[in-house]
Image (cartoon, rainbow, N blue to C red; front, side, top):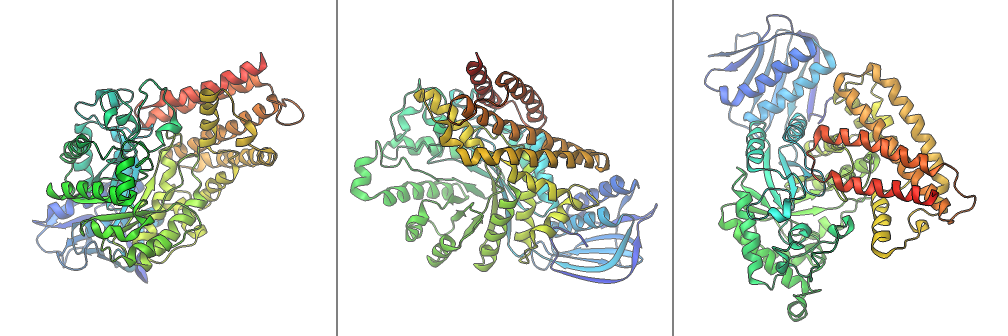
Length: 619
């Protein structure tokens, strides 16, 4: 039986329940609000998979009714449900409306596996961790369309994720900040409120997530707001991706900084129904290096940090909300967390595949009552997510979450340096986080990937993920280094290619490119077996595998042309430049299928710079 997340208890029985024409989905009269949305999802699933038009019928009493019964009993553990399948009816009884939805999601997966004849069984299920979240970056180059954000919400709901955050620095249309967001296509109030309603119907808490201390490059380098930056700002300096990741930090000594940040918080907060607000406050590495140097020398960096963070937490609480904040600065001196409001939530992130529990252990030892662990889907700086590393990181972090009985898991998907990766590729990591936070039994990588192949992609062989996860081993160089080399050349007029791709990396690149080619051929062979949605996913992997290969070939060619390796250029640089540009034409089409125009032009600058350098070397 292939289910994700794995239910807590499954008892199989003899017989089947046969879904046939005339079957009814039954809801309790008077409880349509709790049950009807989930019933509608189930009816759509049956229509999609079986082609049957199933009616939804409210009834006074269900005990003697045959069909598929959905019942919200209003008592029991939150989000729990029991799914009892006999040969003459299916009974779904849940503690609350969320439990009804999650029971229906399990039933949808059973229909995908077994079709019209569902084996008889009893499923008793409940979540191990109360909050199972997903944080999606919408601010570092790529801003999804509303339809794409709804797709992400639907995927979250299908796998029983109950919290969604959209990481924002400057990509919302704040009033009075046109200079800040003018270079992109920001999210609007209407889009946020529509998404909030959409998520709430799916029992997803859409939590506002807004940079409020560090990571404010676009805001603090503007002419309008540069005075609030910790460091002096040259507003005429060209844009650089690496600079945007340099953690532009608010000047805490400027009395206007608090007013600026709390004003942004209030404006953004009003769009959301959630009782939480993530103020971020991470990677404030500039603190004490500029305008606050004297204050930091007198009081200490952590003390200055915690005072400003506390002022923001207190403001959020005064607005009737519960603050969240990233824990990377606090973990350096964990006891300072006791200076913050007890209701606040510390978000302990770690992205290394070799997960340790040291930081979580330190935070737990402080007695902080509210901690989330935050793994990552390993999307950032890759054209194709590294699914192997994602599995290792997410499974390890979730195991620690269960061990230390934390309140939540917030899985993260970042978009460093333009968000080059395709958002759909993060679905795999999203599912890992959903599965391992719902149930403390961690499935093996092979077993989890087999189920993802079947459930998410409709691959009856169960082997599609075997191919997709191998692309992580075919990467010749990461996107960060590809961008960094360009920007160092533009800033300094010089950079050694060998620093970014040395001889050993170049030697292995050829083998990786060959392996990628074999994997792509395997995907082509899968296309005629896949459904329409999976065909799109497969073709996206094929396209991005081509881009991954081109990044490696470009750098190998530049090494040879620059004389940093023996043998000279082994391929025609002019033709390679043309290949890169033609690939980018297809990439832009893929981008626009799920994202606003956003900062696509900045990625164009990177790709065309390399194409021009290849031609310059040739001429």
